[in-house]
Image 1 (cartoon, helix red, strand yellow):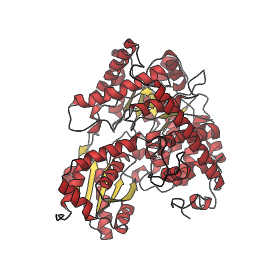
Image 2 (spheres, rainbow, N blue to C red):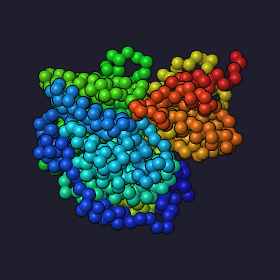
Image 3 (cartoon, rainbow, N blue to C red):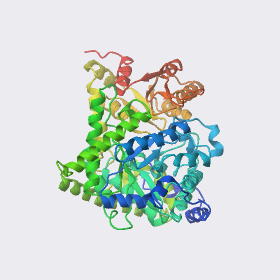
Image 4 (cartoon, rainbow, N blue to C red):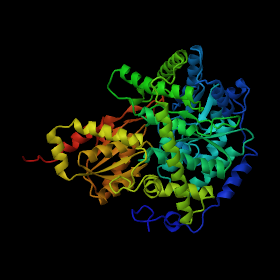
Length: 605
């Protein structure tokens, strides 16, 4: 019986039907053996501070009560990225506190093994061709290299991790992506899992401390309805990395935490039992609330949003230092990839807030710490119950939960929806979306409901009536790991009375067209992030033509791509090309609803 069936209890045959799987212990042993020849190399960040690892430096900052800064960088052109590495450091150092660490935005194509990359497309991120490129980057200025995305958790996990370690990186991730990211055209999840376990063991066996990074918002956490399950996901990852493999893991959160109380409570929950003494295990960073910004508004509006979450994150680190660097996301990210000066502006803004917070000596002003700690108690208790229930349930199904490879693969295949239905800590409730009443409604669920209601509220009564009466079905998909836009489209369509079909994330064009055709969809709506809008749409168009399936194709999100002949490495808008290819490019979800309403018949009074 299918493990995803609503009535099915999990069984090994449904989750792991393969007769034989690679041995997780063997993968761990392979990673530990590789560590004899692949070890952390020198870099200015460590040598300038007389430290062996970023964890050591993070503990110093925690002991001093010092708030540190994180910036995301990584343009297609390696030379531009190296120049930015130095320029941002100089600008922040001149302002009194240099940025501590860079999250390096590698291109998603680097998730493929190097030998296979030429067979697949590219996004807009940084492409490092060889060890020399890794080394040149980390030596550009004394800033911690944080290799996060498209490393651990993907097919190229071992080779990318080895290169990053040799270049001096001592924080690597992003384990969260293992659970949700599917490389287009790459269906081999067993080999990806084996590579992930080996890469984790390679890090764990280093002669210096290496911190595994996991962005919970890129993993299951953003897909649970219960925030306690999101915290339970962090506990499951700790069990795998720390208990089964012997490494150390730090978690990132924040992208979708728009609600101040839950944002503060989650930080305090993650810090429980992790912050004391010489063996404290710090967090990596708290990411900026990327859903806060809006397009088409004055910059001051988005700066007010930036100040709102940054002020909270700074105060949280003053009150309970957990080692998370704060990440001021440039306000232009709502519209496009920020440039270097815009990254600097956001960092300087953060430094001003840090200084103001230190001078006020009132970090707890207007913060209800009692409420935050009570909510943290609920998250810890619920998350622990979820972790224990998942492990017991999978063990009962015949999964060897002491084998990191089997456990990772089982979690990935069962998926967040079914895990929450089966093992969520909330009481059973047939009226709840997952069949359980959440202990703490997850912030993305609240935010999506609010945005969807606002979007549908912008329609006229006639438009809403048309949509509701039409009986329309729309197949909704995302081109990549950024699922938030897809979820917003689905929520808004449901609010407007339109049935949705799940086309998936990293949706393969052929599979998406087949899903839409077989489900009787009257349209396909595609959400995309950066760099592949045109190539992906053209592939969907070819698949639809081959299948003889003709319905409107709507596409929204970051509608850009780097031209093949580009010298700058910067993406350009491709709306005109999308129209020429037969799609309807849209700026927002309300535009999608209006475009669908136009195609629906009038409703008689």
